[in-house]
Length: 295
Length: 236
Image 1 (cartoon, rainbow over the protein chains, first blue to last red):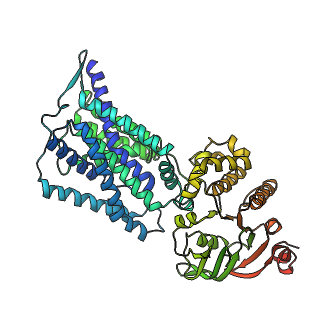
Image 2 (image 1 turned 90 degrees about the vertical axis):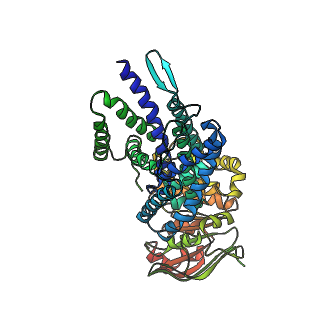
Image 3 (image 1 turned 135 degrees about the horizontal axis):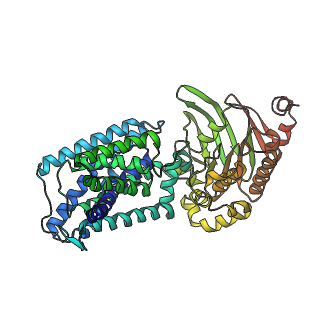
């Protein structure tokens, strides 16, 4: 029984980090209306940035946020501005241009293989960082310290993002563009600038996720793929475009992965995750918090 | 030089030409109506003026400077505000947020809170509903939000595309009364309408658009008495 509780807690903690990795995906989809297949790769890039920042400076992993978040924001902003925007302009009449999805897939392959070329295939991790392997002892339970801080960070990031979108001038412009591109341009909002910002913000949240992962996770060129697929499932469960939905979707996946093995072989949990994904697609394709839009 | 001057524009969607060598002018402080049936090119004309479409030939001058070829956000910044057909509210945002987004351009943003007060004075109903989602409002209230959102942008020229569309007669009267109030407060208004009687009733001048061409123009009072308009648009 105590193990079940321990697994539940650890599942929620890890799940919230999954949610954090998917947050950027849901923001970018909400605004640009395209699935960003490069999102896992952006997370991977952020993990390398975090890894080298911490490795070279020796600071506490969480302090690297002040480097990683702005670097990733700029990276995402200009990735959209230079690589993706021209495709959007060429397909101006299409609301959900499929070619953009193909371009993001190309970005995924290029980033993964460039990383492989530069850093090689080996796994890297921060051996002696302040958080590695640390546990809270709660009675008979062991709770991972880095995952706990990841959980806190995920909640804070989601809260800040929500506040930003609800309460600031730019946030309102982003929401307006996601609801009606043409009407928002009649308000004087440049959709392409909003796309750049949304992509930058989405990439910056991947940077936050990378910082929470680095204390206990390996870095390697294809690490993004693992989170990519989870990310897609999470945003479908939670509802594309919903911030709270991304967190909740992540927690659901985290719970299945950590509580599941108590009752069955661990390989089954993966099957359950995908089965749940299919069930949602059949029964509630808009997800838990998704809104059925009537464009 | 007129406030807004359109000189011989052609507008097309791909191969289909919708507007043919159209010229018109709007003077500062005027209310000008553009009337015409479905498919005459009225909405296309407004979309071209607001920069959503680009004319293939001809020029559009606002306060003496060209605006054709500029993107919508630049034209908004210059002071031409287009309230689109079908209201196009941000359905999942509150009424208040819809209005605030209206004041996005840098000129309007500075005076946002005062403009919001003015707009609420003009539409007291919207103050009551300010935290409601726009999609939950009635058609008439939604049209109020659409016009109010346009006013939030501090327009020099306000272009309204069929504000009476789909509304009950009593609301139509209310909307036109509001347009009159806005004009009396000094905003130049370009009104596109199918409701010929009401729109010409409050306009200084009018243009009749048929099949993408201006077929008739003149002072609104003369147009109301014109035999062609009487038979074609007023059913008399």
